[in-house]
Image (cartoon, rainbow, N blue to C red):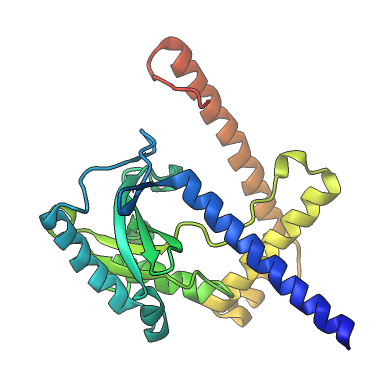
Length: 265
């Protein structure tokens, strides 16, 4: 009994130490201490400041936006986040899937000096609406958040939405910048590991469809034959081939000088 309690104690301490180390590494990579208040590090062109939260007008805009964001969170999350203070805000370049949208990175600090990074991304009309009809949600950020909560077994605890003000009068959704996410290194996987990883991805996707749709209807539509699976495989191969053609066209454009490229260090 005592050995089991000791294992639990040391396991808990190990988890706490790992979490603390992750927070410290994240803070050291993205922020620095400047005077009384930490600041997000400019890393142009990926992360940069457009204004200063110490500017009264700019801070008022941020605080009004934060009020809307907090209102979208469950009560217990609002209590938790109220223990943190917004100390800095910067813009962040988004990934390929969100090109053309605004994305912000906000740094909050607790009274104990614990950092919390939140990311806010612009939410626009769904590309499916012209084909599937208008969304039942008037706010695109709410649509994104409800969809994630519906599909995911355990979503980000700070998922919320709000509408900006002034020149930032756009619809946004927010979440943690990084929520202990694990990124499998598929480049080093062998055939068996890659197959198992694909199986797990398929199960996660199937579970999301079952949670957000009618599982019985989906199962009946797919039936017992392999027609549906073969159609997915054909599409996947065609999509991979198209990606290779697109990449080759990009390289040709770079060599011809039509596209300017900057290699990552």
